[in-house]
Image (cartoon, rainbow, N blue to C red; front, side, top):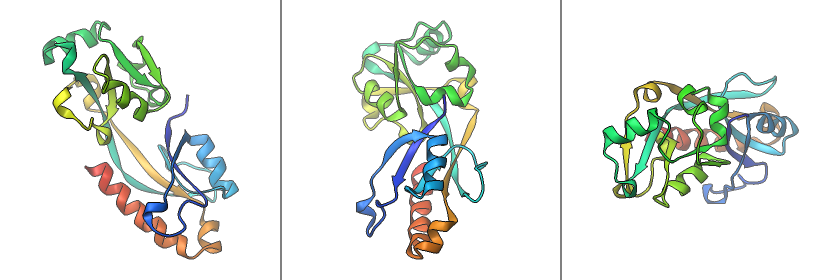
Length: 190
C-alpha cells in the first residue's frame, strides 16, 4: 500500500493561502495528477518521480507512539503491551508503505485510511496510535508520548512535488510553491 499525503488540487491556489484545499491520495495518484496538471502541488514520500516532475525536501519526520491516559498504563506498561502486541492500537493504511517492522507485524484493533483518522481515533481515548511527530495530538493532557527504541530512531522524508510545466503556464505558481514549501517546512519542523 502506498503512503498517502496531502494534495492541493489545481484550482486551489488561486490567491491567498486561505483558499487552499486538500485531499489525501497515494504517491502514485499524486504523481499522475501532477503530470495531468489536475494538481498544482503534492506532498510525496520520495524524491524519485518520473520526469519532468520536480521535488523539494520539506523535512523529515518520525513516528511516535501515543497512548491515551484513559488506558491507565504507565510508560513501561505501554511499551511492554506494545512489544507483546496487546496494546489496543490504531494504525493508518499509509504505514504499510513505510516498512516499519514492529508496526507491520502488529494486528491493530482498527485500521484507518490516514494518519489524521488515526489521530482522531486516539482522541476517543480507547486506542493508542502511531503518528508522525508533526501530527502530535492536540490535547496532550489526554495522552502520553511513549518512546519506542525500535521505532523512534527511524526518520522519513517528505517532499513537495510539482510539474515545471505549471510554472511556465502560470508564473504566479512559483511564488505559491515557495510560500507553500516554506509554510510546510516550518510545520514539519515543529
